[in-house]
Image 1 (cartoon, rainbow, N blue to C red):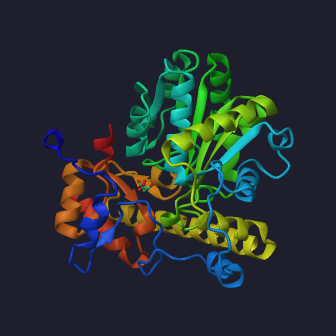
Image 2 (cartoon, rainbow, N blue to C red; image 1 turned 120 degrees about the vertical axis):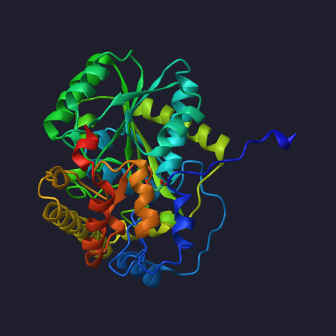
Length: 406
Ligand code: LMR
């Protein structure tokens, strides 16, 4: 029977990592996977996490199952981090949050709940997006459509095309958004654009589903919550899948959450039940360790302050790497305009590299990027900026990058 199986071609992001690790060239640079590396090329363990484990890492006394929804204290701190401690939606208990296996687990549970309850609903996902989004929603049974997102000529959001498309989408469709630090483009909606979108969503009665994997890496921990908080204040019902892989550096612990923002407390209670059902069908209950670390840090004033500063330091370092790459590219190719790079935010930048250019970067320069042209700034080091800029300009000649966009 298993002879019928087709070979898996691998994941465009995850399969690149072992390839990079096995590359013997000493000059290699990993701008592929969205991992935050420090200046020494190491994925750092945050001080707040280390301190939490050192001071509060007493022997674990309970190894029994967590409930299907996960750890209660964790669910509470996550909710407060997303919506703000005094948020009306929390006070009125109209948000229901469960612990999930990373942001991906949150997306999968949310997709299952939505497809189970709205079997004829379709999903709309931005183009381009994180490679796994289409796979998750198609895997949950949805028919997946794409809405235009990126203005390639100007390196920013194509808001006119986006809003025109979403204005014509049928009611009760699910629409996936990136809350901040759009993956792969780094191009985010402005506050007025989010406000305009909320009007469209309300008028069309759409179901927004936010992927929130980079909180703190865009404009700041609270600032990056603008879209989800504005949506909650507008009384829209929606979902948020968030991840602590990047902002806690807890990639391997699979720490995330899924929140349903509802109209009232009884609806939220039922949403929790639906999420629990989907969790039970997929993996029964989440693991303990990562949630314990995050709760320990966020509930301790000093550790929380330390963590907040660490996230801010990562954010600022990404911004200086972005500025450095911009300057180096602009100096090497003054006839092109790279200023759009500075308006993009977060871990990623998108400068119009095509598949052939990405392959040449890897083969000739040992620089790894994703096939769609995405570069992860968090894999760059300041002393490698000139090398990377030179290589980018070299592989992109004779067709300038900006022209490739158009
Ligand atoms: C990425 O986009 O590179 C990360 O989110 C890692 C992943 O799971 O794809």
